[in-house]
Amino acid sequence: MFRTYRCRKCRGRLGLAERFSIFRRYGWNLVAYLIYQIIGLNIPQHTVVCGFNTVFHFDLHKNTLNHMKVRVGKYYAETRQQILAHIVQGSLVHADETRANIKGKIGFVWVLTNMNEVYYTLADSREGDMVQKLLPDYKGVLVSDFYTAYDSIGCPQKRCLIHLMRDLNDEVLDNPFDDQLKKIVTAFGVLLRPMVETVDRYGLKKHFLKKHLLGVEHFYRELEKTDWQSESALKCKDRFERNRDKLFTFLNYDGVPWNNNNAEHAVKAFARVRDNVAGASTAKGLEEYLVLLSVCQTCKYMGADFLDFLRSGEQDIHAFAESRRRRWHGRDRSVAVTSTAAIVSASDRAGS
Image (tube, helix red, strand yellow):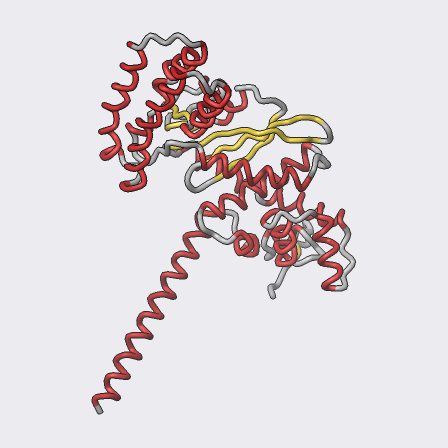
């Protein structure tokens, strides 16, 4: 309940929070609930409308729900820009891209993420100018797959070793009798295994990981001095040498993963939306999905509840998550004080 006012001169309304002025007929909690279903739970809009109308005996139209998505997307457009700003200003970025079906045409969704935030955006092509536009002056570490478009970014780079392992396994399966190829792949496995064990035990700490740099040097010395004859072995050797300064970057930095799993998880979240929409959305409609998906996935990465964030009307996810942490911390303290008082009271009664 709140009181609103209207200016006699300009007829503008005062005393009304922005989110309540977006919809005249529907409350913000209802809008948040519906948006949570289509974005957070990835339920098709038609199914959401049918279920809502059936349960509540309502007459909500699918076009109305789509109109809600459009307006809520505009409301959180600035939130997505804040997410991008946080990512670009950080010391670590994971990047990936995937196809998108736009009314039968092919587009590409680019994903930037770190440990806390996820940013999605739509592009017409897979050309490298998109990543240059997103990361024009980035100086942190960029983790990606082996797509050459990322080479245009002038920063320390880390190629995903899981991608490399998959490619090497495929090469071995395609050339099962090539002993030289097997020798390279086996040597790489022997090199990588203790690195992963160190990460599992101590985390992504340069202090503990830098000891493996000697193993990397030994691996490359053996790679150079061996006389490789098979075509697949020579191809494998060339790939290792070409990416020498990008494969083991994580050994020289704190907090840099050896894989690109963060970006791949974000891509999978979009893939579920892509399967849901099934090419029926326009570029504008898909961009609205990406705004809300950026907010949804960032909430998940930060441990905040997406529905609670929507209902709050807050536009800063960091501020929302911090307020929830303070609230829970204060609640834990009050529970501890109450428990202590109960123990003291019980001991007093036992003494009496």
